[in-house]
Image (cartoon, rainbow, N blue to C red):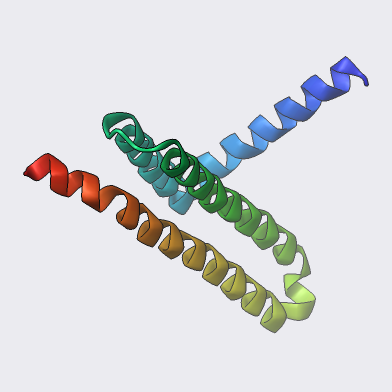
Length: 121
């Protein structure tokens, strides 16, 4: 294993993450929501499995948005020739991100609402 190549891979990944953070409003919103969710994970006495589920959901949503952005950039390369297909691909990926985000919200509510209710009581 080459140490320099490993370090370079991490740098490349961080550069990509920073690029998407700077250029994509939805990603910034998702990161903000993730921070709020992580704050709630710290605040409430969640079970280990609930903590794991929240972290996995955050990872899934952010990963889907990263993939969506990458695919959008890739399809833009094809746009002059295949514009109708590019639009469909972008819509499908946006739908995948939306579905993942909605599932994360539903699961998050199922986990956190009982803790909020106990907090209010």
